[in-house]
Image (cartoon, rainbow, N blue to C red; front, side, top):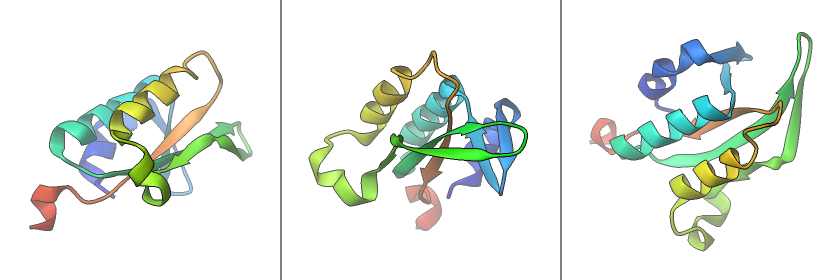
Length: 104
């Protein structure tokens, strides 16, 4: 996970169980920043969050580590997928790998 990118957008997210949950615009910002820095996008989880519960939504989540060969550009796919949910009450937790710069 690349904490620098996530921290850049933390003020627009809810922190629950050590995960940052962003509204669609914030999640898209994280994804675009990850792409610009060459940070791998492993996927994202969609959920509805209230004062007491996180209710995951499998239908609004994506794991690029399992199906990366079928998605040419996971960053663009993720942005489009999340933009289509812009007017919902969903929040997204973006899962990143270590940037290429940090792993060298």
